[in-house]
Amino acid sequence: MSSGTIAEMAPCMAEPNADRARQALEIMGRERARLSEAIDGLAAARDALDDLIEDNHAYLARSAEDGS
Image (tube, rainbow, N blue to C red; front, side, top):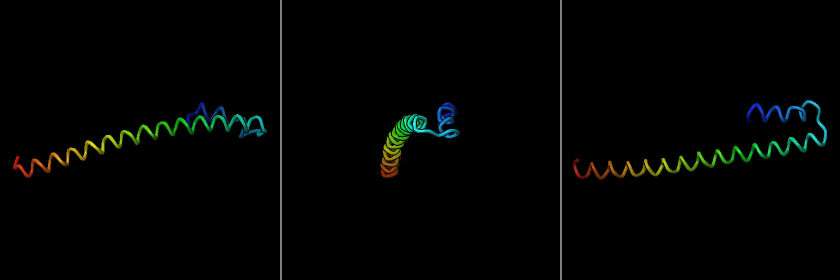
């Protein structure tokens, strides 16, 4: 959560009321969506890296069998 997001939510925490609580909920929803997008991107990058690692292991195994 960025400091800007925290600053947006601070009034709700300091002096809660229904309008501020709704505003905070909207902000938290946006922040959650942003984090989910970042997590999904990292997971996709990890999966791609796993594929490259698997290909590298296969290459090394074939090279060892060929005596290269």
